[in-house]
Amino acid sequence: QVQLVESGGGLVQAGGSLRLSCTASIGRFSSYTMLWYRQAPGKHRDLVASISGGGSTTYADSVKGRFTISRDNTKNTVYLQMNSLKPEDTDVYYCHTYINCHDYWGQGTQVTVSS
Image (cartoon, rainbow, N blue to C red):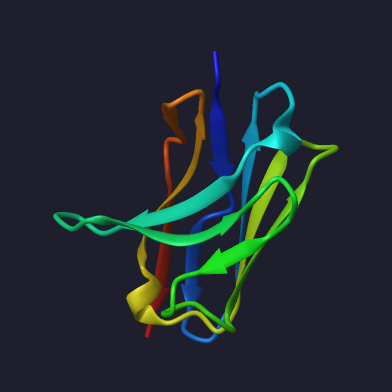
């Protein structure tokens, strides 16, 4: 049973920082691409960042230069360091991976940025 457990969300003022973590109960964690998405109520779930097993990263244009995705394969954990946060970054953030054509999602963690 694959489980993704996020943590690290919270309330922060604009300009502040948060670091999200997602720990996965996956064998061979280092083999899989890990992704962070975010979603506001009634809106699409949008890709924020991804990191391949080899460490290649991609970012949405809206977060480039502010967010950094990284992974620690010894801890089966992927991180999202979020700096210079803006009120429009307020969303529920989800960790995601896909294994053997199956999608797996975490439960989500709320990030709220006050102006």
